Each structure stands twice: as C-alpha cells, then as structure tokens.
Image (cartoon, rainbow, N blue to C red; front, side, top):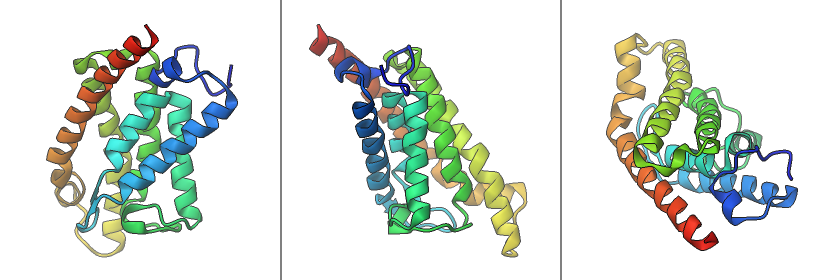
Length: 197
C-alpha cells in the first residue's frame, strides 16, 4: 500500500489498484487538470475568473487529503518555477494579487480530501457542504493577501473594497461550480460501485 493513501479510500482507490506508481500518476494528473483549468480564464482586475477552483475541488475529492494537497502544491511549485501553468499562461514567483488564493487551493484540496476519505462524497448535500467549506478556505487565504497587495499599490484595501475586488464577482460562478461538482461526484461514486459490482 502506498504511503500517500489513507486507510479510508477515495473514489479512485475503488477503480485503480493501490501503488506508489499509481499515486505519482494520479498526483501528476491532478496537477495537469488544474493547469488546464487555469487556462479557462476570463480576465478581470485584480483577480481573473478561472476554472481552477472547480479543478481543485475535484482533485481533492478524487485523490484524498494527502494526494490532493500534494497535487495542488506541485501545481503551485511548477508554476512558481517558471512553467506557464497559472491563469492565462502566467508563470514565476510573483507576489501579485492571486498569491493567497494559490495557497488557499492547497488547503482546500486537503479539506475536500479529508471529507472524501470519510465517504462524504456519496450524497449531494454532504458533497456541497464539503465543497462550500473548502471554497470558503480559499477566500480565507486569498482575501487577506489581496488586501495587502491592494494597499501596497496604493489602491483602496478596506474590507468592502477587498470583497468587491476578490469575492463578490466570484460568488455566482463558485455556486455553479459547486453545484456541478456536487452532482458529478455522487454520480461517479454510483458508477464506480456498478463497475466494481
């Protein structure tokens, strides 16, 4: 059994035999999915709308806490190292407005993975609660850094200005992503059960 797999299996563990090789492949696939989702971007200032959140939630739910967090951490490290995999093909270490969100992605994947390992991903409502919690964590990391960034650049960074720049434009999109992911995951569990049955 791989050291990255918890005693509580996630959906991929129902379909793929456990091994270190499988873990490496799954972590890499999660990184690639997040990188691809980041390119689905609508330019906005100071934070673009992207598909990253959707990918982060699904990666955490599919891979579990350790592998999900590792997959997103690898995404952040590779982007910081110079691969053009951040939103709109950006790369490199940049202390821009989205830095806090990137670290929030890692924490969110871990939280969703924690829930997934406890089989919370089988019912729509419980999946939605887990995803909403993880999504909120992204903002817990992202908004304080965004406020610092705005203030450092002499832009208004009071609470209302920060929320207007980094939260309000994303609420509807986040709700749609969570609704879609919350529908897909229980359906995937059902399919996995039939395939294994």
